[in-house]
Length: 211
Image (cartoon, rainbow, N blue to C red; front, side, top):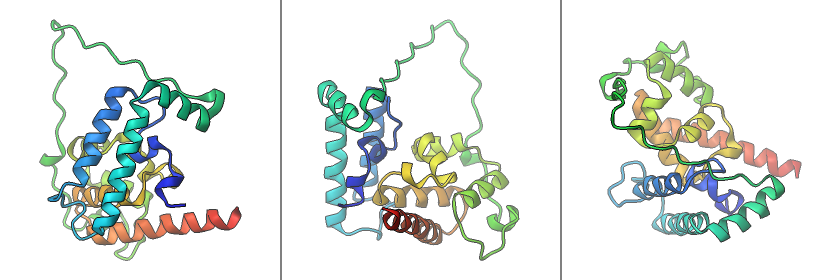
């Protein structure tokens, strides 16, 4: 069984069960952009065959989740009687309401020269989710700002920082997300990807031994 086969369609898209149709379409566009030929997030990381396989899996996930009947059957198979209901779409605010104050964007924040030191971490400290969270806070960057700039869902970003490996998307997507995350924090992308994915692989190996 491949890594992506072990994930639900929701995890592949970086969504929570109960996501709306609009959420699914937006997530698909975000994921699909990762596989554009010019995507810096994927440059030099994957073989073309791997990319084509992941695109096929991504399209399959969207096909199922956007079909009401197929999605209901899929949810019942994975969640049984606890199958989640799509979150109701919020109505647009009336035009008369004043616009919300604009929040500062991450583009106005410059990471410190040494992000690890700023977060109180040694140069050789392992970079896991907790370390990424500490560096982000030391940089004064909110998680919402990273989500806005990178288009990575808040759910996936939280899972990364909490090391919730079981809820993370497939590795081919996760590597791209980690590279973007590292870039926002001024961390060496290759090191972040390598060390975080090593932790993910170790978790999968430990899980397999327990089965």
